[in-house]
Image (cartoon, rainbow over all chains, first blue to last red):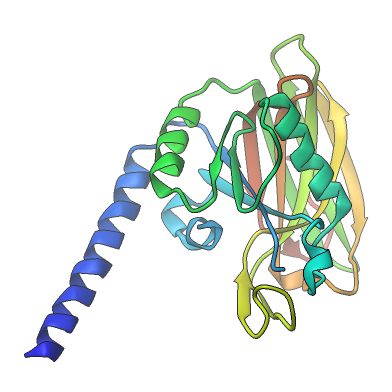
Length: 42
Length: 206
């Protein structure tokens, strides 16, 4: 039972992630965007 | 988040990530091998232009105009929507190929009088690093779009060809080249192009 819930949660998370990615792409305007990340491994 | 953007085929060419590894945390026990004082310096330009008290990590800057904590997906989505609808300063096209060096050709047509720099970045994708010290000691970190080189190749309308030496620490097969137009005063970026270099021969003009 617990395995089933976990599997369902994983499927839901993957589906939501896919939807989010698709929505992001569809909502973009026509021009490319530069995304700079300032980061560090340390 | 940069990894997510870099690996999303649907966003390729539409959302162009650049990861600048700053050097001011190197004193905490691990020297980030991709860090540079030049990238910390670039961040300080944004800090000044945006009136922020200081820089921080992870900090995301979208089109040189909006900034937020690098893990804020909602802010990123809103910024992408807004910035992708901004009119470009002009057009910029880039082509690249590699043999013993990286050959890059770019053409920028800038349709404004304000000083607009044509910037060229070389990035490396798919880098995996075992961190041996500092806060992330013991972790293996996978990085995408790590900026290896950033140069200003012109101001205003520009047509250029440049040969960039391949550093021994770079993996030539994983390089990308990005050109973009940036307002020298406000630092806003409007107009960009990205390409994965082909292997062999000099590129045709963009």
